[in-house]
Image (spheres, rainbow, N blue to C red):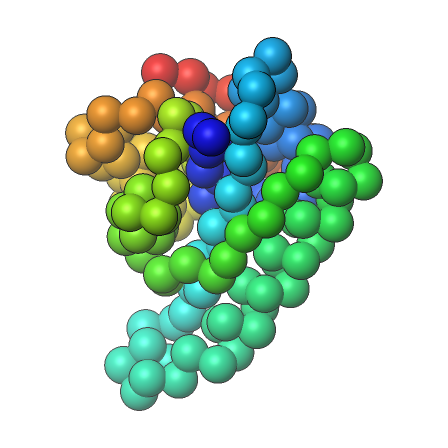
Length: 147
């Protein structure tokens, strides 16, 4: 069984993300969709090892995402991942045979992940194809950046 790994935060309910997942899974037998919701935390809370609230928020995001995907006919499961999305990807790759990684972000200027160069760093670190989905919920614009 091959796996599509999706790393998403606030963008988990985006219709374009769901369409990208559906298109990536189409036509393949035995495809598993795994959603990893990083437990994002503030620096102060991280330094005092207070991750409970971050994990609760990640759990809510993950549950909403899984419910939204199920509502459009996509079977998926997932878990809460490391606060560092690059580490969350690495952790997931130890658990599954991943054929595609989908990273969903906000647009430049509003995305901490893009400011930290997540997508280029992931492309350098992992040899698996990465699909970058940009979701601009404020303007309603959504688009894909494939590599």
